[in-house]
Length: 414
Image 1 (cartoon, helix red, strand yellow):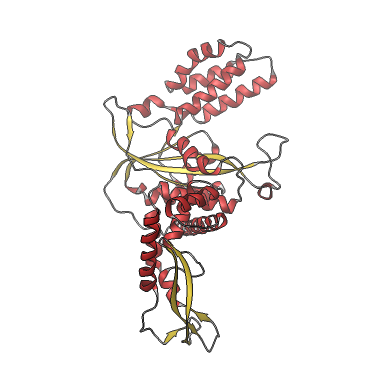
Image 2: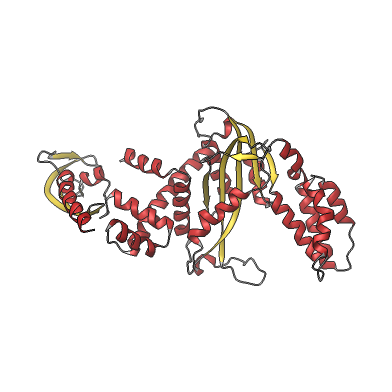
């Protein structure tokens, strides 16, 4: 550690010389007001870099017409209005997206020898996350205006879109006027809508589909279904949706998901997650056979084959023929029968399997835990929508393998 500190100290000295303004520099520069700013003086600026603290010298210009001052060197180095170098901001963003901001601060000090505050980690992570959010929003606006460019490349045999929602805890101010998920209870959470896109080019020797390694990308936010529809459409388009020979939407039975599928992805094969459909059947079996531990299992043995076999009409007819004495149970049966009837064409599982397609939405189920839950549902965490969306954007970018592209685009813009 002492050796590392000495090397960093030497590197910081070299870096200070590299970053400081050379002896020759412009004495007059163009000002945004249309006038000409003149060199006023050399000013120091202290930066925390990956090698430690460095003080650089750069020229300061003053415009005699608008009386505004500027340091163009700051823009060149990407350090305008900040005391942290791009490399340190990248580190702070990374640790802030992975764990609590306090833990991120501790990791930076332990692993990189950089001493920053917890608040600084939070601010930098949220600032970069918000920048990613703004860029995504701009692309979604382009999608709405049909301005997305065609994505060139080879045809994709099968492309999937999966969508789901998961709840995260929010600060009280974000929940005012919102109804709770349980009737009569105040709201404590808000829903994050999450989507993923992945491809499949093969199946195994038993005919089961195999997801392409490294092909999964994620996008999500706390937002309306309308906004999320544009978001997931943009993600799919950028992944080459137009080149996919077979297009599949795979999700649970949530109405907002299928509304998005119908609006933005007409013609795609729609599949209800088989495990979600089975859970509906299991819940009904327990309601019908309450008080008997073995009866629900026996009921499922008789009726699950109808679901697994894609005989949804037969299952619906049976459910609607039931006449329990309880009005509450009768209403429960009616709701479940409507659920299966409404999704009948999305539950032709034998047909989907013959096409070697996935029938379970395990990818998005896992994503709700790994992308969202592992970071935003830790003990004691409560979020604002703005802060949560920034961290969600960060995590989706990193887990989708897009973080490097983001930093490259920042460098090009600078």
